[in-house]
Length: 202
Image 1 (spheres, rainbow, N blue to C red):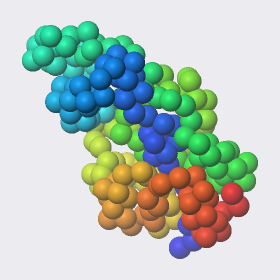
Image 2 (image 1 turned 90 degrees about the horizontal axis):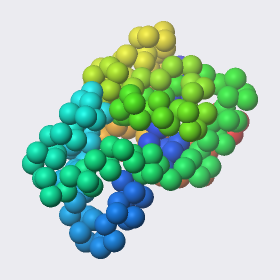
Image 3 (image 1 turned 30 degrees about the vertical axis):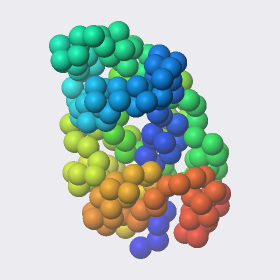
């Protein structure tokens, strides 16, 4: 089956996200900042917000464990938007070309519902997908097969007609496991080359 549908990840594919963008301002010592992100506001802790836990519950849980860092923990939630540096260089332009050509475009993202809504307001191109599957809303996350099947079933898509783009290799493998073509995203130039190889005009 010809690939005719493009499915994007959002974070670090279409927008640049890194908690260090905020915490470099708050913790000047680089080693101390890395310890804070590795031991207190960890990736695993953040992932639970993407899975459906509220920011209020998340902050309360961390502050109870690390009261000396309460202000920094609260900043993680209250100033989350400062972690997003801006659009990922070149990728929104690829998305715009696909849309101009009438290519069906979708997104599957591990994201908290509240912060994703903030990003859609800040970056209007994130509001233009035919459908977006958000992990927090569905209570299932990439690379679990169910999140890919939600998109396919809800939109009447065949896995074989879709190319999925993600910066995390485990998510690329998860998409392939359900039968989707998948591209491990590195930068816009190599993505454009891969899409042209599938017949897309970008």
